[in-house]
Image (cartoon, rainbow, N blue to C red; front, top):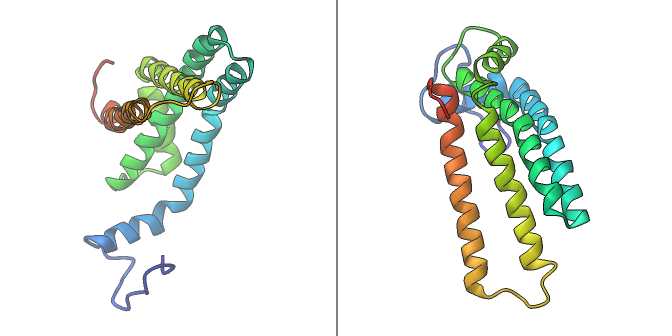
Length: 174
């Protein structure tokens, strides 16, 4: 972890650190497994990406809607598993990270299907809207339209970043 910050001589890996040193300690302990779980999550998003890409290339909303919903339903459990595995690692769960990942799949796959479908649908609609506004339009969009598009996308990201950790931390229905 000494890439951007010089190494601290008083840093001891075996003692639980506080503050920024704790952040460095957690990254040192879990970076490899978190990176692998992230790559699995990216693979889980591939059906959504290919479905949206095919819908954009064919310029068809009839393909976009089911491809986004089904791709999001596939990607939802992967995203819930990623959040759950990382949050369990941050809480110092004594189990192996892969055991935690399998447990999170068992606990969250059913509850993450509907939010995954909504997330996939929103991603597909934003991609299609972006193509309509910025690529296929014969007239360039107004600054107000661009600001509204960017604000709505930012609002979607905020809601998504707040919802998914709560889905895995609390026992709640969608």
